Amino acid sequence: MQPSDTEIAEILDVGRNTIWRIKKRYREEGLQSALTDKPRPGQPKKYTDRHEAEVIAQACTKSPDGSKRWSLTLLTEEMRKKKG
Image (cartoon, rainbow, N blue to C red; front, top):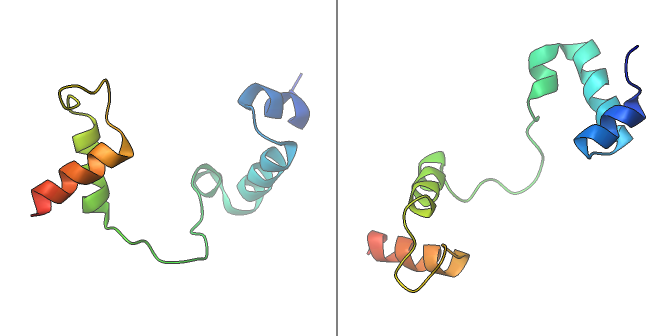
């Protein structure tokens, strides 16, 4: 027996409307469309994919001495140092 939308939503910890919307997109547009987010309206991105990758790469390195992990403040300071 196939699980209900409510059961799927509970398992994935999302709302039933999310399940309904994804299933509808799958039926109307296919699997690839259902698995990816559509572009959303709003302000354009401020940073390029390359900039995002640099920040992620930095966040994956060892945090500075005296810090257990990277904070947004520490990452910002470090990225500013690198950019001069």
